[in-house]
Length: 169
Image 1 (cartoon, rainbow, N blue to C red):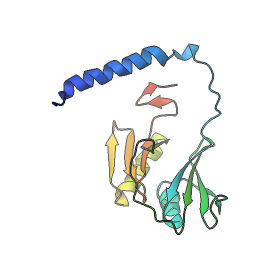
Image 2 (cartoon, rainbow, N blue to C red):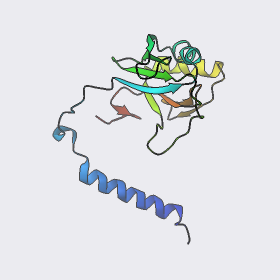
Image 3 (spheres, helix red, strand yellow):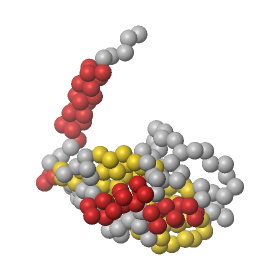
Image 4 (tube, rainbow, N blue to C red):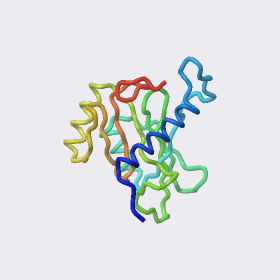
């Protein structure tokens, strides 16, 4: 069995995207209002609470807002960082459980994209460089890097509701 040439696959994928857009994507003026109020929090897993706090609060400047016991797992912590706009980034640790290294899997997390002001974005890029955190810069507005546990984080200088200069809301 021969694999399709890359160009043919690309054309096929674009046809599929176009079919889905034509079937489901409504113009902004005719979309119903969302039933959601916003993202309350996204919860990730931390292998070490203090390392996670130092990374997110000290390096990325997201203030720690709460640290409580996880109600579902005695001895485990549930903690939260302010990522602006009344949104939180949360973590759980699970002491005593053998945690495998982070992997991207079907149905799992690919990345968390957090919007930051362009001036702060530049400062955070410099802080990541100084701290030796490897990152990929994309389109002069986006930084992709991994947190201490391997989760992929994106800092994006575009405003909420925009993606690389285009409105998505």
